[in-house]
Image (cartoon, rainbow, N blue to C red):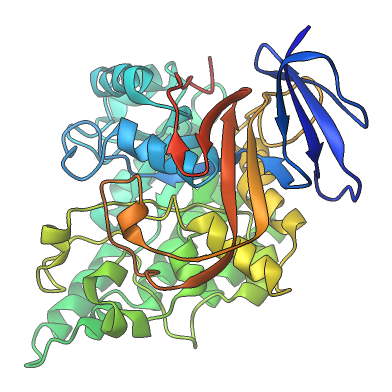
Length: 428
């Protein structure tokens, strides 16, 4: 007797309905007829995708738990169809020492409802070798906060490690940002939309060019976070052709919004890098040229967001809106379900070496998100599981929603209700 059989489901690109058998958290079979099991879930023709993988979240735990924590953040993940999340290192303390990494691991083990990995920060270069033994997803570097000397030393130190881990990069040039911000601040009328000009496309393009050349010279593997301009996308494509081991992600807000939303939504649309004008931004027609989508889920308290644009913290909570927005584009005929799978399941799994996730195949983890492609609604942050009850997407009409999320065969979300589960570290 098996643990679970999911019947009458559709797995794209297959047209006909099938049954998925699960035992001990693994996919046992995918076939036409059901298998005798302790539990049966009848999906009545609904679509099943692999559990989504978010390579870029900020769960704020430890040290900033008034904004989010591993429990509420992974509740939001399950609500949005994500079964695996990778947390960024800019917590308090930052995850750039062995002690801090181990502290966050203990927190995640106790609180996480979905499976997880941790990005490591880069602080003391002498710590890198020991942190690497703890199996971080990548080493994250915020290029707007460092100089070239520290960058090249970090690249060199990381390249010496036996498995040459991925370096994830926030690509903005700090000098350009400082200069442009100082010029903008001289203006009398500091409108919110001016924030985009304080961190112009040039800051990303110069920083990205620098990182690519350095990675090619030293031999690093790099992943570019939240790509925001067409010129940057061209640089990434060119670098790939030249043999650079590089991937890039885009966020839902950089994909679906433009800089006008700083005026329309105020600080709820403030993010780094900022939203771009239509002249510079990457559009839905270029989406298939990206490697993956990372939500950059970055929650804050509303009281913080209600400050003026120059003091409010940047960040958008995206775990619960990303999939509905993409499914809406599918229903409009703009993208395929295969592309959604590639960007949010398959490519993240391949790039970050998740051998048991990202695909619906025999022997892999039974991570699924069930979607109702016909279900319609309006994005309302009041219903978020995240502590952040705001969104620049508030009021957007959507068609297509996650209605059930399973992590290793266990239901953790059904029709908006969250169920207890113990998430696991992905590299155990």
